[in-house]
Length: 164
Image (cartoon, rainbow, N blue to C red; front, side, top):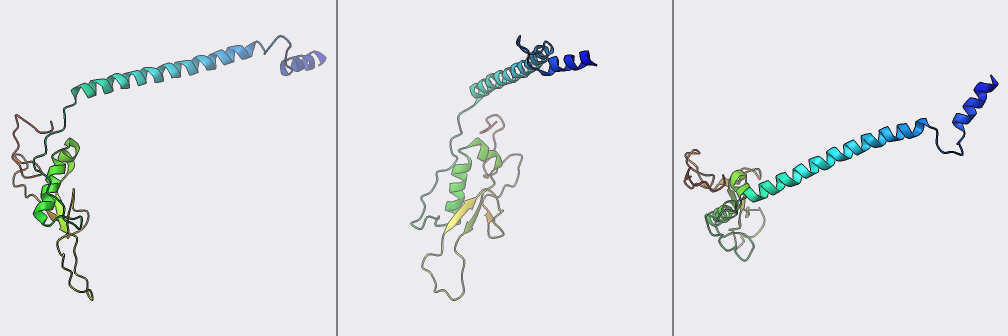
């Protein structure tokens, strides 16, 4: 019983020669596992950097806008639905992300309110890439054939795509 108690004391008590002989092995296994995870993470990061460089080398410049944006009125809106739609088309065709995701809608921000005198400015048009604003938003460009027209009503040249 005394030999067992002494043995337990030696294992539990710190040794003047350093840590217990089995602990360095446990530490080296944990360290090896950590190093393996770190090496895998670095390899994945290096692959991402190389992949990003390849993507950047294949990028094309943004397309030229298919329309010129009209000037806004003094009140900050557009003077007509057509102007708001042209502003949407200018923004939507100058970026491939917007070109592929934007469907132009426009609305007049002026609404009649009871009990308020008639305002002089009743044209305050704005555009949006979708009609989530409600039923007051109207589609800007009627697309009759989605196969041969883009969302802005322009014909698509299959041999010269704006945003491939």
